[in-house]
Image (cartoon, rainbow, N blue to C red):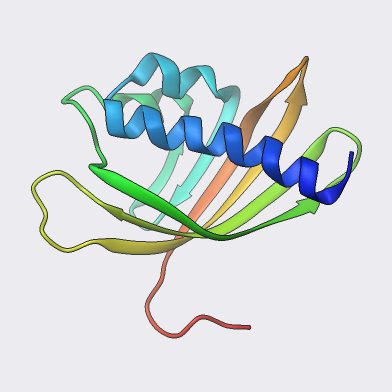
Length: 127
C-alpha cells in the first residue's frame, strides 16, 4: 500500500470517529476503538468506555476540521496518523485546536484505533 493510499484509508476511519462525536453516537465511536484503547488527553487518561461515555449527553463536537495530516507506518499492521484538529464544542463560541496522534491497528478489512493523544495547540506550528 502506498503512503497516499494508507493516509487516505486512515483518514476515512479518523473522520468516522469525529463524525460520531458530532452525531453524539457512542456506539459508532466505540466500534472504531479497540477493546484496549487508551486515550491521553489534557484532563487525563480514558479507555474505550470513557471515550464513548462522553457522548451520553449528546454530541461533544459541533464541527471539526483535520489539517495537515501525515501518516507514519509502524509495521505491517499498524500506522500512526498525526494532524492538527480545529473544532468547536457545543455551547462554546470559540473554536479550539489540538495536535492529535492516533495509532491504528489493521483489523480484518479495516482499522481500529488503539491509542490517541491530544495536545492543545498553543502557539506557532513547528515545521
